[in-house]
Amino acid sequence: MNYDIKSFTFNPSDIENNTYGYSAYSDSEDVIPCSQEENKSFDQSFLPVLYSLLFLLGILGNGLIMVVMLPNRRKLQSTDMFILHLALADILLVATLPFWAVQTTNGWIFGEAVCKIVASIFKINFYAGTFLLTCISCDRYLSIVFAVQIYKKNRMDLVHWSCFLVWCLCFLLSVPDAMYYSVLIEPRINMTVCEPFFPIETSVSWKLALTFLFHFLGFLLPLGGMLLFYSHIIITLLKSQGFKKQRALRLIISVVVAFFLCWTPYNVVAFLDTLKTLNALKNSCNLENKIDIALSVTSGLCYFHCCLNPVLYAFFGVKFKSNLAELFNRTRLCPRFVARYVKRRQPSTRSSTWSESGDTSLSGVY
Image (cartoon, rainbow, N blue to C red; front, side, top):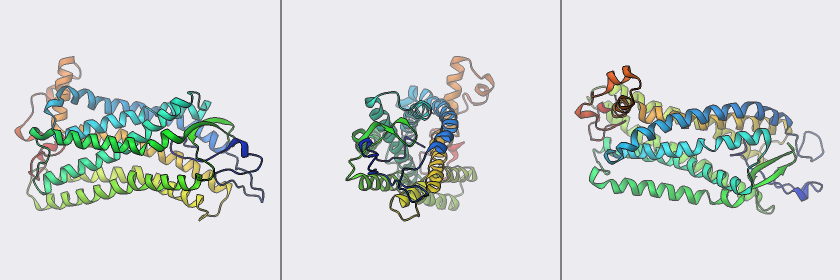
């Protein structure tokens, strides 16, 4: 069971009367909550290893971006600033994974306050990551298709305000988590868990509302924006005669494909879970167990995207490589990498990952 995303409603006082807020059923005629022992065993063997690996990869990759970019923050272009905020969001999101990993093996042992804080941090940075990806695609769309530099150096306050508004919106979207996440005993697995606990009379409506909000703002809206902006960028690139155009196209396609492959499986399974809640699918313990395991696996893909972001948005950039080489040069690390990239900046490489001007060649990408 993927505790940090999936939700249910449970009132310990209603066990005997079977008045659970979630759908309680079994394969027999008795309406008894399905056993979760199979899911519990799977999560205990799978999730701690997965979350530990994603935590390390996410911290190392995004931490490297922070270390390289922060000393040069006064010289950052608009896309660089969005990438810096994206790295921060990814770090804070993967920082919550150890808490969920511990919960799968020992239950929630951190207390009520930490439960609410961790759940809120997770939701804030989940939304921040997807919104910032949309901001990056919009910024590149304006810069390349229209050759409009809305975020110029002397107007960097605009990009700061954009990031500030993104974070404010994410804080607002995390309010339900801060209000309703609580520590309770889940009888189906006989463990203490940190889960959303809604009033029994509004549990289904709250769960459905938050689920559809999650699908729309966390997946459909960012994916639609990325497809719209990057499709226009690709058309512009195909019409241009820019140098290294093919590499730029491959990078753009990689960005969209990575987002689609990492987030679509989870949203499809979560939608099936919603249909089950609405009784649009035939309820059975077998179906519930399969959906729970699928949610655990596909949510790992979502978190893996946080580890891919540094590769897709920063590590390909010539400017980032140059700054990284200078950092290594000062610390005397990786001499071969330093010899290859230090002092190699060309006039066209003033942007890190994408061209900051209207030059549709994106020659500064590599």
